[in-house]
Length: 201
Image (cartoon, rainbow, N blue to C red):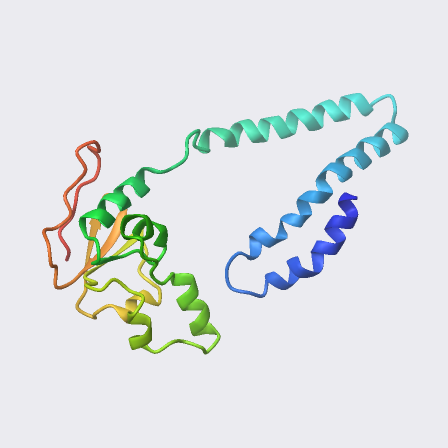
């Protein structure tokens, strides 16, 4: 069954690698082969070398465990949500003014409005089906004056939509572009001591 599932998923998985974004996720059908491949390898090893099979299997398990234990400290034990809490603060403080191209749910839950997603804008652009700026503007914040992006990003369709004079700044772990600011600059959250708002440059 795992082999059949993998076989039927393989064509669409390979097709997705020629698209934009998400191609590595589509190759997860390979995981369906791992259980049956492991059982087949164990059976083959026991038939080929019954006396040393146990030792080889123990060595394989030890090798996998060593690799996983060396990697596991890098994996966070809790969801990384601190930046989303900061983004929620920005979304509420600048309701109707701030745009999150990569995190549209922040403004949806803060304002009950769903603005354009960067992936959608980029896909339309690549497909030569880009919408006119006036049409796009209908689904952007009505008093758009800030763009916030997680981490450091300096590329995207959003840059062609915002004014060229937009100034680059940082707030906690967010990259923030501002122009014709209608309100006070973002203020750091009291609960977070690391990271402060940096004036746009």
